[in-house]
Length: 370
Image (cartoon, rainbow, N blue to C red):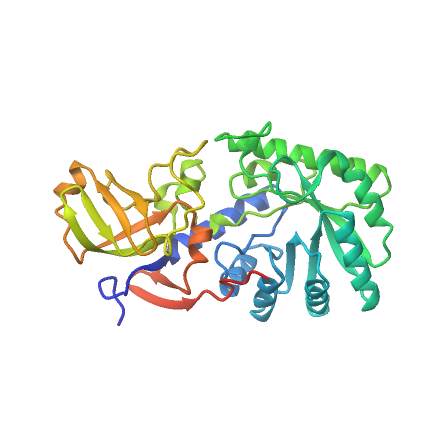
């Protein structure tokens, strides 16, 4: 029987009771605003969790890649939005085959991409439901906001594409800059997109879906009249970054990495068996606006910091209180990572913990990059 003491480390633990609360709380919040919830599955990468989110009220899920959509569909999910531009014939053909089995929406952000979708759909005698991605300041994918109307007109003319919505990812940006004021950021995001949707409708384009909102901005964006859908992802587990943004408390974080101390070279230094192959490093310490200290929150050791990572080693700087805890080689610690989504993708499996019971699950959509 698995216990916390005999689990092999490093491993990723998910507290089921916390996860359940997080899923229900987001569903309840979104329903109060009478908008649709379409969680991004990038965080958990598990069809079983996606189905739990749908059972709680979500209309479907969001993914980034065709391969992720295929895994989710094979696991029983029947309504999927690929929020990513598909621009190669092979991926578009896979998406079309999938759309014959489930309700599928795909993203597009350029005329070249739309032409590829149209050509493939025409050749296969199929139509695709698409949403136009808008860059509202994040400077990633998405047509520039001021150029969106012209592109939408071109896409709407294509006979095998059904342009039904617009979407954006903006994160915690306000007036073009990173911010901790996520409420104002979400309101601005929602307002920008609703205004654009109204302009497109005035041009005769039947936009029905206005899809916005990451975990930081979901609540405030959902409150903007005219927004129809939000796509938070991280909320299912939460992480240290979301706690710093004020979206949750550390006690709400369902995901943590269990590690073992493998060396104690000095009083203020402990080495754990989790490094950059275990913890995501995309959310770095000391960066604005979060100004996080270290690569994760070490539970029950308030002045210990995970200050440095190599591939297989994590270096802990121990303050006076942590030194007084008299940590020994072989002791286990739990660390809440800065970013849970990328951390999950480093692990082949997770351990679902419900009280004293542990269940090992493969992360089925891990590494689905194409």
